Image 1 (cartoon, rainbow, N blue to C red):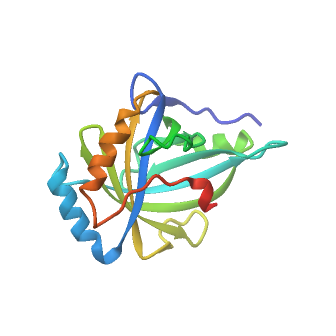
Image 2: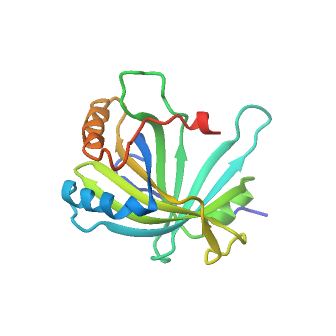
Image 3: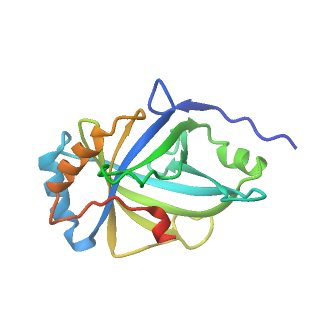
Amino acid sequence: MEAPPVSVLPITGGTINMMEYLLQGSVLDQALESLLHRLRGLCDNMEPETFADHELVYLLKGQQGNPFLLRARRSLSHPTVPWHLRYLGQPEVGDKSRHALVRNCVDVAASHSLPDFLNEMGFRMDHEFIAKGHIFRKGVLKVVVSKLSRILVPGNTENTEPLSLSYLVELSVLAPAGQDTMSEDMRSFAEQLKPLVHLEKIDPKRHM
């Protein structure tokens, strides 16, 4: 059986191969409104964009080494918009002078047949979750504040429960390779969010 056709387009325009600079932290549910108030004062958009997304994480296991991982995400609030397919490379955490985690990022828009296409290519879904929250922007900086929920019945996005009593906070920039001054701008912005949230350079391997 042939894999169903799927079309992809760059998300960022020009090139789909970028570097992601990332700082992460969390804030307890009861402190959310204070953080949103601070972000409204610091960012370009007084009222943030809101989102509700369903993300599926797919693995392709090889004969040796780590499995190849892809992330497929669709909007629950805007079901007609294209899916997003994302590949995130291994983080470059060795450079102590960088204030942010840096990793390769390939992000494309895809048609709604994406899950079927991935299954036919040999990928298998490892887990899925719901992310709901707010997006703020300050120039090229993007701040995402999201509540993550596990899906209790596979495929049923209405039947969920929160993963924790906190919100994930991510400060990120997408830029071509070599733009390491971005991490300094991110550090300066992160300082303005203390003590509400402490954004850090987190190595995912330490939490696996």
